[in-house]
Image (cartoon, rainbow, N blue to C red; front, side, top):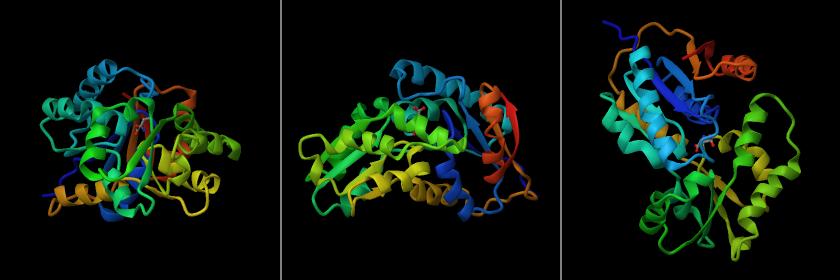
Length: 264
Ligand code: DGL
């Protein structure tokens, strides 16, 4: 018997697409639903209480509506704040997205790492804990940027972004004391790998960027190993608010396998 239950990816906006891509490469037969909380976007400037209240409730509705087999919280902000509450609220496996500090520490030669995330993510104790466990001998500098989230959304809309704007974001890391020694930057927001080429072009030569998307894709593949998939069907992208801006993203989502767009 085939199983038509999809994997549900969740983010505030388009960032989760950076996790979809490597997952699709590993699981070409899988069905995906992409959910964006456009009504709650952006998460990075919200309070912990708002995110903790909003995300588990929304995911409960989404899992029921789409009968998902697995949920991917493809958002570092939601994961670092609400993962335990999401797991408690759902009866399907949940994969989270947390800053890739461990692989960054493995790569860094200078032992100075930059963590680029949202304001909400970079202030989490979860990040202190990752730094203490996996990068104890590194200086871990952090910078939260709502501007970069907006730039990634603009890029997906096909709008041109001034290269100087990427340099201005990176200055938030490199201008900190010791920042000139950073050799690895963690893209600790799922939006940021979508604009990694532009970030890298604005960064000093030799600086490397890491994120958790490939590891998350492997985890999803392991959790669904041996499961059946029904005949391939175009994916669905669902928005909590479907206005003109979201509708304008239809071509970008279609190009990534989400042919249908709907409102929650
Ligand atoms: N993509 C999200 C993350 O990984 C958050 C972007 C936002 O809504 O601020 O943190």
